[in-house]
Length: 330
Image 1 (tube, one colour):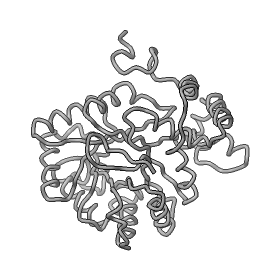
Image 2: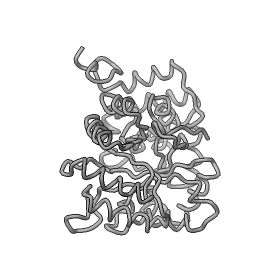
Image 3: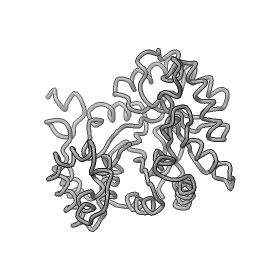
């Protein structure tokens, strides 16, 4: 497994990040523990979760599963860079969500208890809070840092100007600020290339793509349909997107077949070839799915293949793969 620094920080993380959103709702606790053990065997040290995962309000089901895994010892906690998030509602009262200083304090302590650890490596804002001033947020975060409860801070689902706001406010306080931004980013959703990626690069933030296979649409969905296998991508919004982009996805799967590679690994490898990307989040439901994802970390795509992928899934701007304002101003 290759490692890289998370943004401008000195923290070393694996080039693939283990997403844990399936732990609980889709994957049993025993299987979840087995997947995390297997991840360590393969050298993955970067795990991502959130206090709302498990989708039972206030319970933090997924964090609890990870906490019981840490409690087994054997260096599990020490070998893991654990990233969790706050923002979503954990209760029915007004201060049980978002980024007030009060909720930051309560949410951090609750996550530490569920995770059965005394510090969080990377604490991420799950969304921007337009109602809370940055001075309040950074003051609350600085207290967590001083208490030794959190080491690094990150964001998720921020616009480029939100990253600028956050970092300039942190700079004014002589605070390190953000070291990462977690955004949806994949071949089919490239909007972050306009302003989020340039902002992240400017401020030295590592980019952690979520939904790297666009809900499974880039994971060989048509091949699985032909083979009679079930797929979460064949229902709901994914089904609508599949019909809309069927021709492109079919061409993509044919290109992957020509390369002799699994479509999921090509999609992940493409992200790893993008400047500023630290580690796409993979969300295996089984240990076998985890094993199959590791090929992406070693897969090298040449310029010709990258060009073909750009033709199939072009950048979101008429002038090609350029950041704002060049993307639309000239």
